[in-house]
Length: 256
Image (cartoon, rainbow, N blue to C red; front, side, top):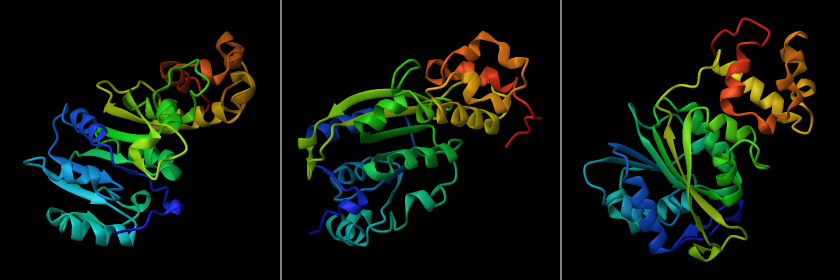
């Protein structure tokens, strides 16, 4: 058997109905290569290994879980990447789908790592602490809409699929969980450069209680800042409005 480690944010899924719903969502989009992040006790992994005709890999940091999975699931032999997801390179060449019951303590970092790989990852099915799932899917004007929302949605259409109650896990977390699906945007967001867009979004939300004029004044010339749009707060701007503003920022806007 294995022990559960709070330091790694381990809450392992055990509800077969929830596992079936996650699989159903996963199979709505075709894929040839699949990466599971944090297989843990293998409840979801056992079902993923049965999907025919795909190249499957799982990344797991915990030594004990790697040993347990290799013993409990013979079909996983040679498919485990024993590394830290946040510091590894993409495990496949070409496109691959990502799935996981993501550790709550690094869930935002996981999404930002996926953004670094976005050109290879068309679909993500992920379970997060409900608050993080809501932030990723939130629309402008919502109190949880912020940096995570605006950066993820610049590259993915985000759909909140369903809640998952604490009792579906061992041990039960103290919070609700939520499953979301990310699908790559069919059309790229029209910004001047990705670097400008990220800089603008992070600067704007860094002082989200202030008007845009005060929060991002260092990024624009004074005449641009007279636009009434800058009377608003960052949380009211859509990703399209942020993207349009990048063309009015100071600097050359060289791509990064």
